[in-house]
Length: 636
Image (cartoon, rainbow, N blue to C red; front, side, top):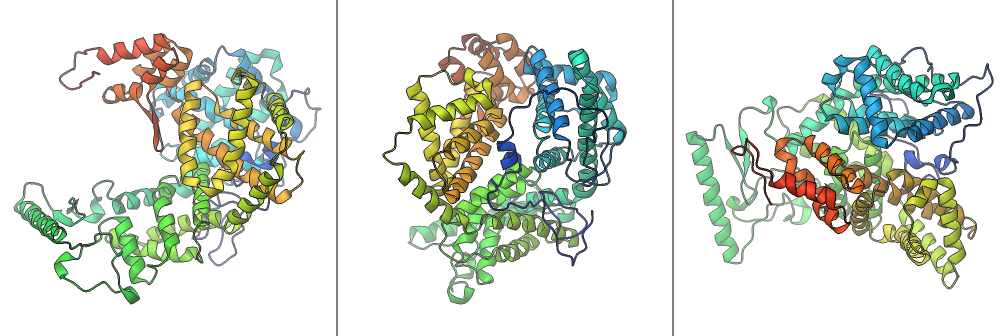
């Protein structure tokens, strides 16, 4: 699936071929799209899978016009959408639901899958670096997300793509895929017995072959490019010492941002450099005391025409970080007045670090598009690319080559496409949503709220186990969520922090992230019954989709083994969870869970929620003095 350099690239999905500079991780979000491949309109309207009986013989399960995928072999030569017969999808989802119900708990089902994989191929255990319990849950979540996306070819492809990026460092081969596939299928078949039909078995084989081929395809075509991005970004942001391509000099940044270099810490050159840095720092402090100032922001003190203000040459600070170098180059290139570049620059680190996670990358771009909509100026995204490349060339001088140019151009091309799908829309959507809210003022929304919860409980019956509060409280939650959709357009940064805090509270309550999508779907479905304003409904759906994605991500990232043990109030599970922790992180696991800018203390949450058995186990573990106390310290 290669694309020639001068051909027009057709953007269909988050992942295009890697054979030219114009390929990428882009997707086409048309009018009415939620902007998230995992929460498309097709998925929103998908009812809970029902097993309607086996398909008649001779039914073609796979649409061969899209890609060649079968139950017999792993196809790693292409990576297209997998389209299955709707009846086959229902049978596979029903089989997976039955397997989950048959297990005592999600953890038990996960452990059964993990055990079957290791028993079938013990040599694979060396590839699993994560503790057993954590690895089992990861496998369970991966299979669950794949089967849940079977009815949505675009969402399934994106899910498989995300798994591929997570396995770039593993030597995935077709024989290994076959071993894992057969182990998973036999586990399900053993649990279900005669309920596991031949169609279910074939669909599961097709799905796992498809995912295995995707892992091999992505690793072959993208591993080198993504490693270039990671290593050069680490060098540019001084995350670690520059690699061998950067020479033997070590870059040292003092308190004021000045750059010094030393070959060895104890060498005369190092001492001289440190002495020089101290003298420069002293000069700066004296100038500040006299009312002067010297800028180290790499270009924020530029006069007209992009020239640096005249002054003492000694006060000129050489940019040493990416942000400083970017501002410096922006001013030199005549872009110092582009306020929107500061918004992109602020989010750029998160964009680069999440390039291997399509869902997170889309989320970052969606939030960034809302922030850019607040800038009242013309936005030309290619200008950022020019400054970005100039800055990276300066910060990675010796290791920079044509491969770096291709990799970074590829990244920005895809970011630009993701931003382009929402460019100019947020302002119109905010006005449309405000118009909808105004039209509903003074209207009794009690029936709307009741209907919304009824629809939600039909889509996700498990939700009734978590919404046990009074009707007044449930109505308050509905109104709060309703208002968040407009607040996302007005104050995106503040709402993202608020959602992070709410997500961690949901972790404490043990609410699964799988309920986020049907909760959103119920809102959208019922709202269509009281309004026919398509523009406002589209704005509401896009905003709510972004909110549900952020909330689901926070829940998934915060649902650690320790928090699961606290939700169950089990000291046994707590001890088992802490046993998986590295010795140097044992205390951190039970004292803090951080997602984004928000954090929660498992110990404090256990005390506040009455999980005293788990709290007692945490305190005992913290106060335990171990034999290697000379190397580690634990205490309160």
